[in-house]
Structures are given as C-alpha cells and as structure tokens.
Length: 365
Ligand code: MN
Ligand code: MN
Image (tube, rainbow, N blue to C red; front, side, top):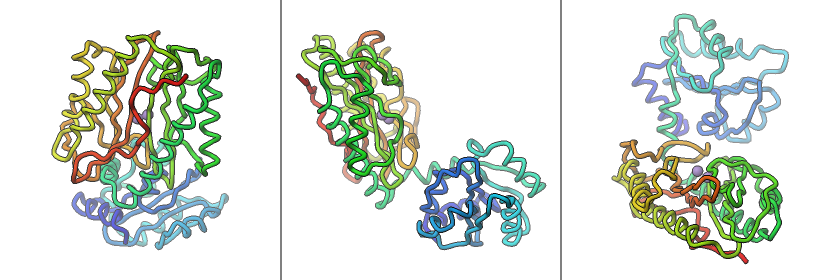
C-alpha cells in the first residue's frame, strides 16, 4: 500500500471511520497518482481501514489508471451503467458496518450526498478534507522535484514576458506570447489564468488582462504559474517600462524589503502569523499598511491554494517540507501596484526559494 493511503487509513482507525469515499480530482491524484477531470461522470476512490482500496472510473479511463501505477481494484463503468451500484457492492463486500463515511464535504454535490445516504443508510457523514489538507501540506522528495521544475518554468515565463514588452503592446498580446513560449517548452497547463497588468491595472490584485497598452512610465505586473507533472508554481514580478517616478520607486523598494525580510524570517519553528507580520509591519511602518490588502501567502502543490495559509492570525508553526508563497504587495487604487511573489520551501536551513527570477527593480527601455 502506498504511504499516503496508509496515513489516511491510520487516521480512519483513530476516528473510527469505515470508509473514505473521495471524489475530487486533486485528492484522488494525491493518493493514486491518477489525474483526471471526469466532468459530470463519477470518479471516486474508496479507502478502508484495513481492506484494499478501489478506484471507480469511466470505462474509457481504465487503461490510464493502470498506466498511472494504480495496483488495486479498478471498477470501470460504461455510460449505460449506474456507477453507484458498483460502489455499493464493492463497499459492502469489503465491510459490513459503516457508522461513519468520510467524504469531501466542500466538494461533494448534493445529488451524490443523497446517493451515499440512501445506499448506506444509518451512516454518519464526516469530512476528510481537513486531514487531506494536513497530509498534503508536507511535500515529499518526489513532490519537491516536480515543484522545482514548475518553478523553473515560471521563471522562464517571466523572462519571456519581459522580452515582449514594447510601447503599445497590449496586456493580452504579452500574455499570449508568454503562453506560446511555454507551450513550445511542453507546458500543457497554467496554474491559473495568467495575469499581465499594466499602468493603473497593476493596482488590482486580481485584475483581468485586456486591451490596455503598455506606456512609458508604467509598471507591468506579471502573476502566473505553470503545472508540471500535476504540481503548480506561482510567481509575481513587477517591472518598469521606461523611467518611473520616485513614488513608484519608493513603493517598489518597500515591497522588495518586505518580501526579502519575510523570506529571511521563514524557518522551522516560526509561526505563519510571525512571517506575515514581519512583512506587514515593514509596509505599515512605511505608511502603506492600508494598501496591502491580502494575506502574505498560501501553500501550493497539486492545488494553487493549499495549507499553510500565511496570515497574521494563523498560529501554525512552520516545519520542514512546507511549501508556500511569500507575496507582499502595495496597491494604490487608480495609480499603480507592486507585488513580488516567490515560492519557498522550508528546509533544515531555513527557507529555500525555488522561483529565482531576479527581483531588483528592472527598468525595460
Ligand atoms: Mn500569484
Ligand atoms: Mn499566490
């Protein structure tokens, strides 16, 4: 049995959970190495305390499940079969009593919830999400290798974006050039919709790229990430096109200082809150506190937002193997914004920064 499934099983024993029935693409991938978005069809993974797990998937996916290395039962169903009948039978041949069934409450839809209640009457539905978030928070060597690749390609994407900046280019033209370059390198998927924001648009932390053209004196903010072997990177760089005014330079310097100091402070034994506050206090101390409107960072891995959450109220203590972003920003509405974001890994020797694109203010002319 793989180590990840064993960890889930031992938690189920402690909690007296008879079966965990998981249906999210991400958690199934984490436990089985099979990655698939099944759309409306059922994809499920059942884990037991002692019995062998099984995976249920559309028939056309069966070979891919084997190719992913899944060694246990595969229940493959055609489009004219009812997959829930197969699930019920497979569960009931393995166990007789199911007081508690763990599901992903934030993911499972109501139709499926009712299906489970109906077929396993008398069971109590509990949540498996928190446990899986805890497990996924610690990255093993295989995951770290994938994350390193994803980060290196994020660096390359920033380089490609900077090379494309010229007077009059639109945000969307620059975005398309970045993704074209990445596809030539074999990147199939971005971690989220790529952001290229220029001028006043850079002041919107979740802005949407459009037809705005690059002009001299503007900041251009890139926020992007790539998915490699199922794992996400997430980087932000803000660069200047032509000479920028002193106020913009000041904002840049404060964000950079905040970011570097927070990376320095990130190590095993320090709380998430302390890391956030280290960065936040520098920005607030410079008089821009009200313009830093989000948490300092977030864990990432199979999903682009995972644990740990780096907020000023999270008492969680950092430990070796945690992987998260550090991304302070200052956003002056209607004027300009700066964010600098790296992905860091907690090691025995503090935080290792896996995204490596340079951070000193870059002025493109
Ligand atoms: Mn980002
Ligand atoms: Mn981020």
